Structure formats: C-alpha cells, structure tokens
Amino acid sequence: PGRPGPAAAPLGAGPLTLDPQARRAARHGAELHLTTREFDLLEYFLRHPGRATSREELMHEVWGWEFGDLSTVTVHVRRLREKVEDDPAHPRLISTVWGVGYRFDPPPRPTEAVDGP
Image 1 (cartoon, helix red, strand yellow):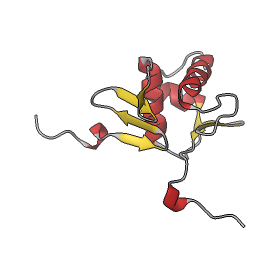
Image 2: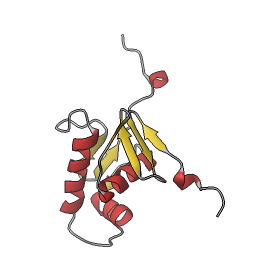
Image 3: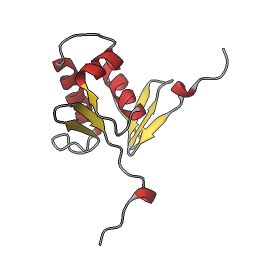
C-alpha cells in the first residue's frame, strides 16, 4: 500500500531505459528481450554508474549468492553487452576493469559534452 519507493523509479542512461516496476528495458526505444539475470544485472549497473564492481560483488548483489562459479557473471556480462552495446567487441557502456571487474560508463549527456579543439 502507498506510493512506490525510489527503487521503483524508471532508470536511464544514454540509449538505455529500464522500468523496474514493469520489468521492461529498452535501447533507443526498442524493447530489449532480457533474461531475469540480464535485467537484474542491467538494473544494478544503472543504479551504480561509474563504479568498478568485482565479479564477486556482482554475484552477491545480483544473484544473491555468497559463492559460486564466477564465470557465470562473465557469461551474463557478455550476453548483456551483446544486447546493449553498439559494438559488443569494443564495449563503451559496460567496461572491463582489469584486476577488478566491470564498470558501467553512461555516455555524457549532450550538455556535458566537451568541445574539442
């Protein structure tokens, strides 16, 4: 009962939008067909932009597991990249941080863009 909390607020960054209440995500307005874990992983990344997160932490935060095969995280990140990146072989949104894990790097807003020389 009552109003939905901030956790229910729609999220977005660059070409991506995500509605936690409806469990829907889109890229450039086109609905993404994500598995439950891909959706949860994308939601985690959108809620923690610019933060390097270890595979262990992702396993705990997204899967709710204290331990497990970390390759599960790697595979899900790869599959998510295939759905959200312009070029999954050269990801710009979900970066690998060597020795740490992954980081979601939202593109700058047009007003934040820096003019070059």
